[in-house]
Length: 193
Image 1 (tube, rainbow, N blue to C red):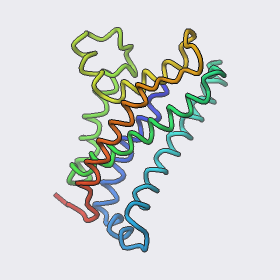
Image 2 (image 1 turned 180 degrees about the vertical axis):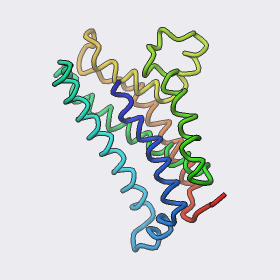
Image 3 (image 1 turned 60 degrees about the horizontal axis):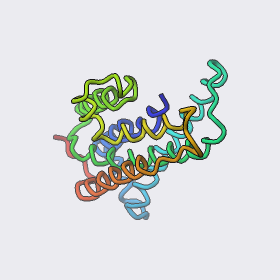
Image 4 (image 1 turned 120 degrees about the vertical axis):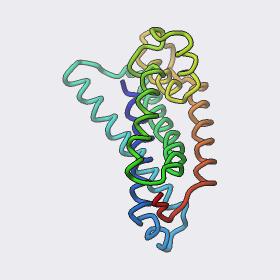
């Protein structure tokens, strides 16, 4: 499912930020004559562009190998959903990195969050096949909103361009919450704990 590409920004960015902080790379970059916001925005932009590139490659493979074209009337909204989804998951990625004290803990912590969310938010298992209580928990997380937005694009019964403002609003709100946490807690120096 294409929800994996924008959603992959979250674990990749979390681990990369912890690695850069603990190796002293963040400290060295902070010494550059650039504002901190430019350094952080550049890292987020790289993550978003990587997610978009991976999505394009997967779309090409899906089309060539499986004959899975993107419906032409929803292509623009698909691009918007992927870009907004990837950008929205950058902020929680930065926020999670602030809670991880060393590189050895980064991957286990990130995977302990990502794997369950991927399964309970409708990415691998259809949301309708989950028990109601588990679906209720999964609907709280922004992965579900991204999955719904992307599934609407492929739904043959989708009218118009397939734009789901509610799902994009949920992604933006959760991204903003992650941004607030990241801004308050982000440190440039190694924590080494």
